[in-house]
Length: 159
Image 1 (cartoon, one colour):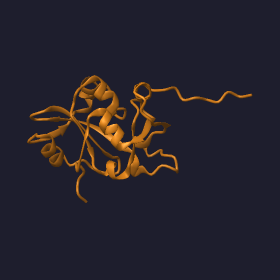
Image 2 (spheres, rainbow, N blue to C red; image 1 turned 60 degrees about the vertical axis):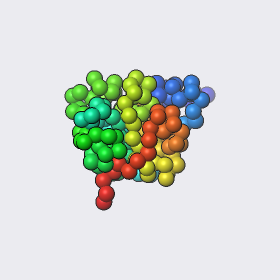
Image 3 (cartoon, helix red, strand yellow; image 1 turned 90 degrees about the horizontal axis):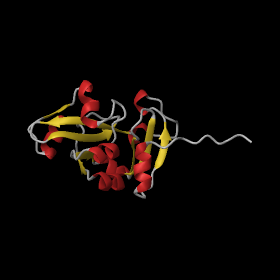
Image 4 (tube, rainbow, N blue to C red; image 1 turned 30 degrees about the horizontal axis):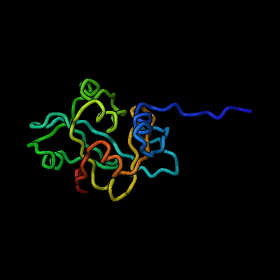
């Protein structure tokens, strides 16, 4: 009999398991457009690391199909302006490489304010990185926000 291949748990999976938080582990690279047919790309969220002129580092999370409004994020975070952290400084700031930033891991290491676009609350569930490229988790939006002390706000650009 062939052994069933089991996906190795990421640190994010382990943190959520230890906290007793229900989630699904997924393996695909949504940023590269490689999503399974049964997953709607609008349910996949990117975790962006920014720096505010007053607060320092902060995190914005929104669907990969949307663009961040730096103006809206600055306003809700109490900054005059925010800007993306340069990719060369990303790992030094968050502990993760581009494409692997995730709210669970970042919250474990840092107390950066986290803002999730309100569309996640309306969807009920969201998919975010699990801290490794090609690995993600599906989780209830409110449960994730509560666990990482995030707040929901309108942070995406208007179309």
